[in-house]
Image 1 (tube, one colour):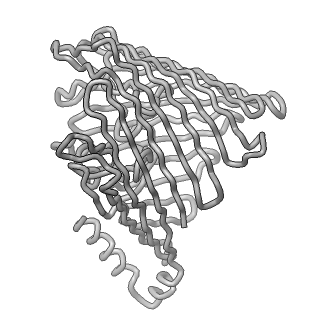
Image 2 (tube, rainbow, N blue to C red):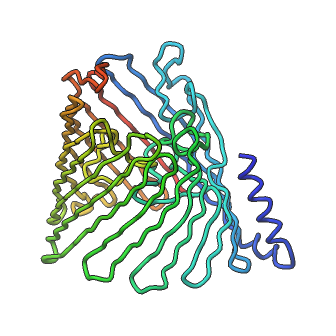
Image 3 (cartoon, one colour):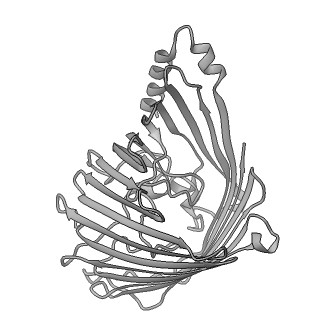
Length: 400
């Protein structure tokens, strides 16, 4: 946190001068209040639950010579009476720091320069790329210590490049509030470059390269074609590919292939997706640093850490706006994940409700059922059997 605060102090000194008052007076305070509950009923282990109240408070200055400074405080305060006892193993840690502790940290602290078609941001920030993303599924999004640059000067093309050093958040491992190296130990970070192209009507394609120090080199690409057949019928086809090349005996190597299709008719959307991986013996693929880009990803399960994976997903969504309830969507998904080398076969069913009540207030509910009753074993012969679990997640958000 000291480094991030230092960045903000230096940036404010850069802004000092005759126009500092104008930049500060044009600044904006924004934020979000969140209340969240999670409860997990485990088939084998002790059931867990947790409740938190928190959110984020952000300030960003106005522009001065195309420069802005921003900072955001992320907070999660445990509601003790509605959270399981840590000593009894009943606390669910998804919303907290280690040992179900409350936390507060500087999730964002950056300098931003934007002029014409070019922008660059350095410091703690939210970023969304295929293998490094916010994955905002609990109390706060992942944020990254990074330098990110974007150029949009080519018509219908966006160039993105940068360097990511560390990250914090739900996907970063133990203690959500601590910024950690990408491998948790000694990785120097990730250099990345991407191109997003929308020059062909109804078609969006992107391609990315990641050099992840001490972990892997990765190439990712996908394409999505969308067409409206008439006023009520729309179809979508998508494909993806990812290649991992191992570094420093990380065991992360292999190829990922994916296809998907979706049709929307009025208020109803129905989709299907398939992913497969090919790996050398004992190797695996990863989500990257976030929720991952794979078409079959569910609320809990993905093909992350699976060898020679085969996964498919069926999904459906109903937009209740068509029935007069503006902002309400209902969704359901079913996924099956298999790995023959790992003797792995897990099924998951998800039910999701999202309600944008008004411009400021929204509510989310997800209920995931993970069926893991085949007593999976790992390559070393040890058991990874947990019998599965059911997990309920509720979140209420208010933006200001």
